[in-house]
Image 1: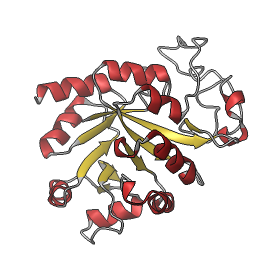
Image 2: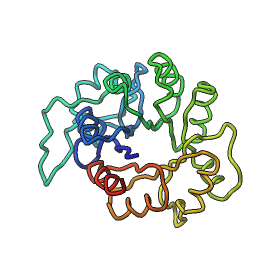
Image 3: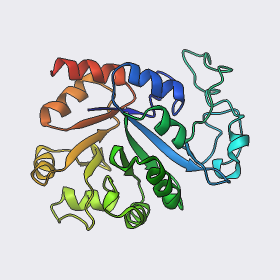
Length: 246
């Protein structure tokens, strides 16, 4: 599977409805996005705590109400060949509710980027009956544990950093167990994705998704090794490579 990373960070302004729609137009069926929460407790698709890197605003997402956040230009700083072609095109920071509702047949990977969002996410997935198509990940083991406790058997999660270390070195799975292992090729000089790692995951019925893979040669190498998913900023190239592999 090709999982479009923030829709795409390179082809279109990341984490916008334009990026998500264009990735799906390429026939990608899975989208990755990041979650922050506004001051009035609305989950939005935004990577950084701050709005500065991508929008024309200042400050942190958590300091904005949804109404104020929706005034910002989410494409303001997306540069293409020295220009900013998407400025003023009415691209806003979308809510998670918006993307789940607009794309009811699409699978999602969501990344809990800040603390204390777990209840908001469980309530929204419950309301929209979306647990089965949303994989929840985080670089915080604590956030993942909290989400699993709240969601119970409905939770579909990737592994946190400590859990991935246990899988990589054969120390056994955690309880409850992550259903998907989403990992980098390597980390701090250690190769994470190896044939043995993939075999171990597959032997226990777990998929392996690798991030963030943007070069076709690396895509082909990983697919040949047996990975199940590629998280990429270049869904256009990813779909071409998957097509080559049948």
